[in-house]
Length: 344
Ligand SMILES: [Fe+2]
Image (cartoon, rainbow, N blue to C red; front, side, top):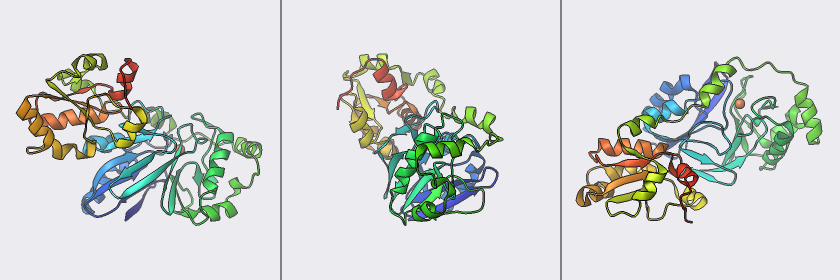
């Protein structure tokens, strides 16, 4: 496994780059905007192909690199389903698994620092975001923070095996990694024995707001790909328009989501399944979708969860010479809002 802990000294943020092999797919957790060039250089050096960029929660102390990484690598952006971000490509919830080639993360909903805080367990380690820090815990006094909820989230993390490595989103003292057992013994924030006692401790902290907060929070809430340009070129159909097209001979409907998303959120009947990471080989000359579109004259109609992967797919298909390709603006979210039927 390739595992890199990367540090942004301005915001004291740790970002994590993970891949199962050189030359393979990579995932990055909590990237910082100002470090995006560094991540891209490192991935080039290690011959890694970024497929997913994930934030553990909506950050208040730095601007996320999610949008910039998506724009430069066409990767999938991921956040929790409670997040107030306008658009991400994929949203995850409690009990989901988030995967790339050779790597699988268990998704744990651990609210308290914010109401969209998640932790991600991977084999012998857990990425705790700002829920559990080394000898500390994330503040709970803004962004719908809730000390009582955080207490429960911390209890849950403490039930992981003692020797589980703890990789937080920040450290301000120079520590890089700890273990669940070490934190259980040495973390002063884990001394309270009930939620009320923990909430009283957190209420007594009186922390100043992060310096970047007024800039970072609004910026982090606007990470979505601008789908308007795709629509202006005539490459988008609304969900109600799509309902009229689906089933017609001239249209091939293509679902770009992953199997787990299809099982959880349903599908639009009659769609072919081509997961987004496999898109490029399918639309290039000789690929199945390329042949389908050129041999039958069918119009490729892509959809995904919220329209972001499908907007990138339309651009890629257009670049591959498939000029009739289009997508359902807003994806499955818009489809369901328009009263469209989904089927499990
Ligand atoms: Fe945070």
